[in-house]
Length: 345
Image 1 (cartoon, rainbow, N blue to C red):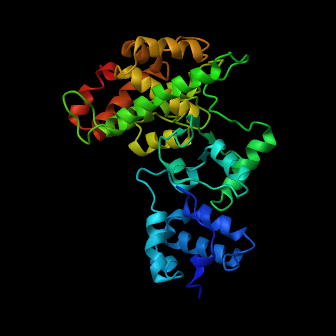
Image 2: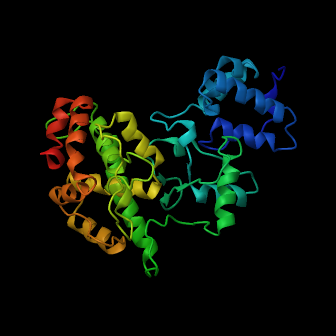
Image 3: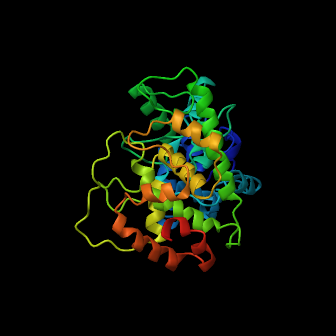
């Protein structure tokens, strides 16, 4: 493909835009003649052959970069470099409805953002107020045109959410927006505490790996129809008995725990961060009062102490806590196990 001056005639990428989104927006721009269906097909083929199908990683591939002038190759590599701790492309379905709405209101095609692909991320922080991410559920999950799919999904279902809707009740409270923002800031406080965790456990703090393990425990689902850990079922209005698998339960691997995080809704992830805050005493009495007042939990209040959290967590197949302890012993540092006494002690 001889398109050495390609980038000069292409639409400028938006802040934090993914490479696949940028290519998709250019393909729908009638003024960009070199990016068309054949070009996108070539990108798909290259990504499938070398990058596990991840089009956003084409900026790492010399074959793709060779289609652009040398002066532009470094710009593309830097502009579309992906952050660490990514969800694989097939599970990257969370998006910010406010960003997409802002794109369309600015008379441009909606764009997918790199920050939405970060594992465990549940908020968009680029607006004046925090916005809870939503999840794409429609079929046709190709990376190309994914932003249009998300925008259409929200518009078609009549659920185009401005704000975050962390609080979901039958009757809206008069100060819901204020309470939502306060809740989101509490979650963000816990998220930042996790981000600042050391790589290795210390006397005062567990490692980041340990905290991600606990987050995965809260969101783990051993099979599709199981309600799973406390982060999956605590919001439910009716808590029927957990479905049990006929297969023997074994200690889950770190990969399987990460799958639970990847496949969970942003709202359940945000709730699980609040549980982490309870487990490691990061929440004040005022925080817990707000959580219990603002969020609707039908059968139990939000736990105030780690021992109460453990009792609730053990509602998820209580005889299997031992298997989780085995998994922790296999996958975490010895110093981390001491920080999990509230759960396994």
